Image (tube, rainbow, N blue to C red):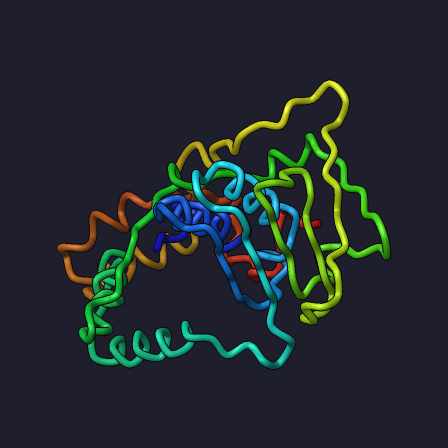
Length: 247
């Protein structure tokens, strides 16, 4: 988890989370992922670049399979997790992001509390920087990332993305070849943010007013007083399918 000053909600953040999670698990050979088809988070070349790097770097991982749910059929296990969190939040006052992290942990007690990892801006990596050194060439029937219902990444083919627009195992994958541009070297991901992200001055002023009015207990005031802000920042978050690193 992270707050609005530490990261956004796009493919940079999702890619970092998935990469960190996979790399923390040793002795795995195959990873299978299911997700919705949100283009701004996990169905784009930024996320694919992360998957290729992960399957290459991991000492034992050979294949990553990433399948996308059909539209209208996107119920996942995480939906029940969200339901537990919402139920817990109805009865517990929360005043800071740390409070939300603690609430999520305690939203389940059996078999054990949820594991929550708190991230800061220093943790997020921009895997998209790798894409500027690659050119994309499709062979066979032309398919793009946004057409996919199944993407596969193989350690033995670090310069290819295998793609299908069907779940049929008998239909062969098409291939997207990633070629290094002449004179360029593929780079590892760079830090996405050099400092905390600023919220709008209007939002900060509203939060400070809540502190002054006693709506937020005094013990939490320093958190809000130290939030970075700017007059030029818009008071909104982009929708998760809107991203600066689209295909």
